[in-house]
Structure formats: C-alpha cells, structure tokens
Image (cartoon, rainbow, N blue to C red; front, side, top):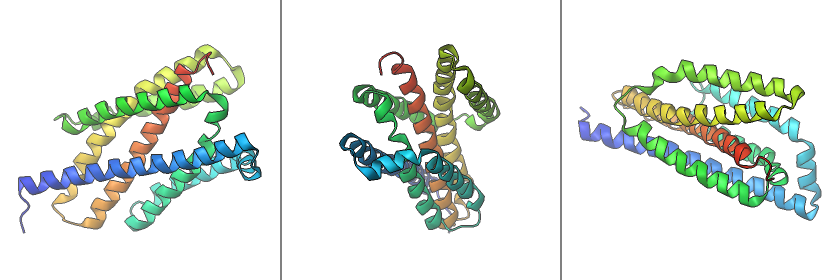
Length: 232
C-alpha cells in the first residue's frame, strides 16, 4: 500500500506530537516527585531527607539509566524504552528537588514559564523550517563539551563570572538543540515512514522525547541560574 503525501504528513505530525506529549508527561512526573521531596523537606519528612542525602547516588543512577537507554535503543522494545524514560523522569525529580532549597519559588516558576515559552517558539521553528538543522550538531557538541569542562573547572574556582558564562552558553546551546532535535525527529520519521514499521517509529518517538526532555531541563536550569543570581 503506497503512502500518500497526506498520510505521511499525518504520520509525521502524530509522531512529533507524540514525542512532545511524552516529554510533557516526563516533566509532570519530574515536577510531582520534586514537589513531594521538597514538601517533605519543609515538613521534616525523614524519607525526603534521606533522598537528599542520597543525591549523588541518585545522580549516578540517572546517568546509568540514560546510558542504558542509548545502548538499548536498537535492541529493546519501545515499551521498555518508555518505562526507562519514566524511571529517569522520576529520578530526575528527586535530584531536582534541591532547587526548591536553593531558589525562591517565584524564581523557579518564572524560569519554568520562560523556558516553556522559549521551547514552544523554537520547537515550532524546528518543525516547520525547510532547512536541515542537523548540520549544526557538531557545533552544538563543541558547545556542550565546553559547558561540561568549564563547569568542572569552576567547581574548584567558584568564579561567578565563569558561572554566568556557562549559564548564558547553556541557554544558547540548548535553545538551538531544541530546534535541531525537533527537526531531527521529523526527518527520522520521514526516513523510516516508508517501511511502515510501527516499532521503529515508536522508538524514534520515545528517543525524541528523551532528547527534548533533556533540552528542556538543561535550558530551564540555565535560565534559572541566570534569573536567580543574587536573588535566591
């Protein structure tokens, strides 16, 4: 059965929308788990206190889950990848709960709303542009590596200027990453649509959701660090 242009357009729209919905579900789970721990800390809940004390352990587990997700992308079923995504979202909520201790709620909310608006605008551009944005990936990887290296150095220097530089660079890099990832998800769906293999398309959908989720969270943290300077 030959796929028409309208069929392809509906499929692409459906799968990109699916990635967005999974990303939003992940953010909701992260928010709920984060609020649970934050609220527990405010009330002296021993479970919440224990979770914060295990911060670094949970952070390591998060990295393991993401690495495992990437390693299993071609081997595991899409349902398994979806479960791993949900687990990662929950773990991230536990570690991000520390934000509530560092920043005032008004700053966190304003940073989140700002991130949401910026994400929506850039994602729309990434979807509708005719340009292949994946060509910017090497440049973005250089920016990402720079962020990691400078952040590691600044752990010891504790220089506020470097911290601001990393935050601004983070906003630039992850904003562009959003457009590139949306564009990449769309291109991958088009490339594999002719095979009409729902399992492959589902994998593209959930792996795209994880990429967008990571873009959103990192953009949010960058904006939060900038807006919270001197006011937390």
